[in-house]
Amino acid sequence: MATTKSSNSPKSSAKDDNSFAIAETSGKQVLFEVNRYYDLDRINAKEKDKITLENVLLVKEKDKISIGQPYVKNAKIELEVVSHKRDKKIIVYKMRPKKKTRRKMGHRQELTRVMVKSIKLTKGSTKTTVAKASSKKEPPSTSKKS
Image (cartoon, rainbow, N blue to C red; front, side, top):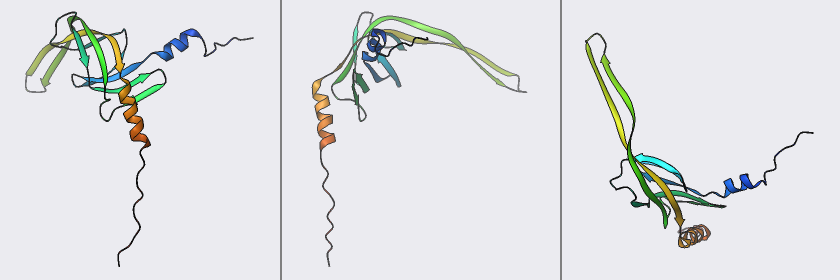
């Protein structure tokens, strides 16, 4: 008989417990996970500096998901600058046909490698979202004036 893996294995449950967050940085939206490295556009900071991102769009913790409108209140992502580096070189080639005009340029994007130290969501933000969701709207009045 064929054996199948159960979904209650420790590896799969540990992967489900991981929290992540989507944040806005340098004009892009990036999905951050704890203890992972990310290459972002150059950030003006020295190595080993701590950076906090407060433009958090979504936070997932275990079974809870908090979505911002547009940002989640009291949510922070703490990053540590690991190093500064440059990306692979890309070639930009412009040519106008039949005009003998050619232009070849190269570009290397300046990057900052960061490591995510923690994703924090304080308790106050979830209470406010629950309170907003449970508020009742008044029905419109149906009285007519003669």
